[in-house]
Image (cartoon, rainbow, N blue to C red):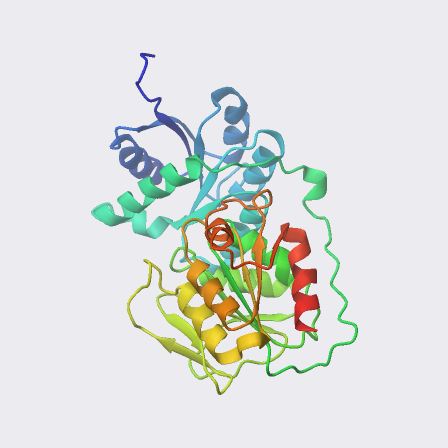
Length: 350
């Protein structure tokens, strides 16, 4: 290769649908910086190909014969860690659990297959290219099969009361967020003494699947926040797709369709600013893995109103973008590995 010529990003497409393989191949090969290096029609073929092909990134279907995408993701991340982008359909709710289990095994993100099937949708093709380019640069780590089902202990809540209406926990996350949220929320006890409000950036249409998956895995209740809903202890409220979510002085959720802030709707900055102004020193905020800067200004507001702030550390992040932005603004009380964040949240709300 000539000096100064950048190597092409090599993509392995894994899907049992000839039409979807053709669509993905056409989209990828239209970008001058990328090429489809190979196509696999089932998970086993992909698992066998990866060590030899060494692709830069994999697009992974979930429902395939011989071996599905969940098992393929699990085996690839245990033996030959490679960035994986799941390509799944929001039409099949039963398959949502597979998507988020695959993410817990190390897949990085998900994109809606139905959008890509509309071949004339130029925007969806551009979104796929942008995601592939970003995720190709993400560091992935080996996930040993024996460690994947490791149980996480629930943090004890000694000395706390059941209801603490003047306190709230707020969490913001993006890329890598689903597995990070699971790690934090799964450790919180059923009688957690205050409500939790969350902004998680995720492809539109997949939020309900994420909420269902988290709710099954956690002792606390997890749901999508509703307008004018009262914030109750032991409940985590996820900001819905395409709405800005705030908390009000009445202890209720406010949803609005005001414009995106910093490119995001829901926006972590919008939620955190409202938490800071409403709960003041009773607020605890955590900023987790994610690309960009969303949440950094909101964390600053939490500090200005004397709340407590936590950032996930670089080593445990999939992407150290959002936490890094907040850390560099000197508005973080504690920078912690992911597995320590739940315990610190419990300590701060006591």
